[in-house]
Image (tube, rainbow, N blue to C red; front, side):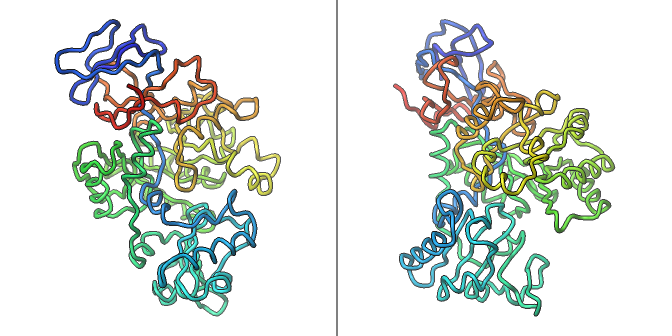
Length: 458
């Protein structure tokens, strides 16, 4: 296939040809070969395809059958109660209510008693916006066996009874609740229309069966994008096209931080298996502990920091020297502005969701949406990056788009448009100088592994 008359900033060329999933020629004035499809870009900006470097695909697909119960759509206890009772009235008898996006600013901390008061007669599970917590009502606890579960993540009241709050027990809960009929093909199609050519799935603790199923969905074309999947060291690559295994995800929570020797052992085990680590860091103490653990275990190429919600200035030199990128979510300061205004001290806000200052310090930076815990539209992320208040964190449109242009395994290393590169491409309708307000409506075509998966121009 051939794209003609495109704008490629930094290149004298306007035409790009690919064959077998790889770019084979970049030049100006190319003409279609016999039997070759071609697309006139009409001066549009041709980019390396947008790769979402942090997403949770199964949770995003499941969200289609869920009830939003958090800000901005649901803001107080009255609206929360109304959302649950509306779902209770509309759903078939016995079907679970699955609420997502909850935050304590809506109706305070939840437990089974609070949910029983609202919906006593059908099972309910509510996911916190952080993704770390599920809360079940009594019917939900009964159906899942949470009352008798001895796992550490089951929170208990002073009498030793399960109070419905389950911490980091997604996999356990998933084996005890009927699977949803979520369609990943719909998620994939929407992403293709937004120019997304690849994902890094950051779901922690995936089993071999989970990874096999994800690989099969990619191979079958249910998921059209390329998928780079985080997984524990013992999980093996299913060997499907457009699918690869990535780093091992390590989750940290301030209330259950591992002792340093235990953390070091986790990092070393992943490294011995040839797998880098991707460490979830949303607080200052989590980042400091991670630095100490990687210092002792040693750095492996591909080690990375997920989120980097709080990055003290004195840690940036360590990140730069060790070549460890931060995979961040620039839209969270927008989506969660009210929360941060309440919960983050004024003197700490300079460290909150750094962006431009990381790049200026020589730290590699890439972006992911963290969907469904953030909005899945990468263009919202780009807009948030260029519309930050004037100062060191704001990026230009080109720099913001480059956050999604990294290699899956090297997210802060930009992919190019040149012979030999994979033909994952996003074509915009307009040239770079006309991209003033980046938006998904600008996407004219999306190419994955040389195959058009979305075309909106003739």
